[in-house]
Image (cartoon, rainbow, N blue to C red; front, side, top):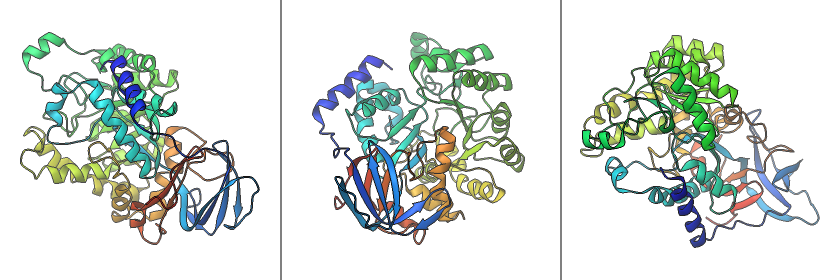
Length: 435
């Protein structure tokens, strides 16, 4: 994907869109209730003083008077730390045309679409995301950071690292003429076939400005290939990825549906397993021993299982994988939670429609997780997975990422679908009374 084309698209879009949020001056946010993400408890009224994009102080009682600041009245609302979705793809969104669009659309088209997807995600209450695969994401991240467009804070993987013919090999499904013209993709394009290739691919992601490394340790559901769960990296290859990533300060997320691929990834030291469909008791024990996080993406599983029932939505090579694998993820999540596997929040949004991320909370609770733990998965636990200590809780010194709901999600988890206020880094993107 052409970097200049992506940057040009985002710059052009910035000239067309009014993106300014409310001025980020000092403010006092008066909350009717406040979710303490560290303890998982819902507290009573509090006032949050925000200065320079950070939380300056926190005062019990929602009526604290502070001179010289803007008052934001959320006394009839429930305040929480901004949520983090650890698995999104902001450069795309599933549709029956997804497989043909790759041959028809330019990078500029994907960049323009991504801007809208990013804003939907932010306004749904997600102030941070980890984008796990897509060349648009690093440039979208930079445009958001520069204030050119509206969106969440992005931790971008850039191109996922795959093996030849594996999930995330960009040439899967190409006919022989196209394959001959383009040549086999290599480490620069994120496709590896040896430990040396693996090291080069990580270094290329460093050169490209990625924030995290993503590997496709097994087959996948939506790739144009037969296997959805076979291991696709040797032990040496995945270990080379992890060791090289560690040299550069990167954490590694491993897409994995099959058992053997998960075992290899966890043994090698990845930070998180994504999806984890065929996770066995052995894998769960190993993840607990190693402190490996599980990011389940139930929403994506349910979405693809539903769409597999529709004629023509997926290519026929994909349809049986979507039907078989997608339907299992929620049950795997339930078993993993009961077993005590560390769990953090992620949706694989881009498979489902952007902005619908909060439905994952409903599915987690439906599977047996208490609402408070589901909210912690998207706040303090997500921050642990990212390796950051400045977000995920509402406390002095942390980023002023604050959202508010119309009702208490600990009493009714459906409340997460009704976000009424969004502040990121002290800037208000969705104000009281906007909806």
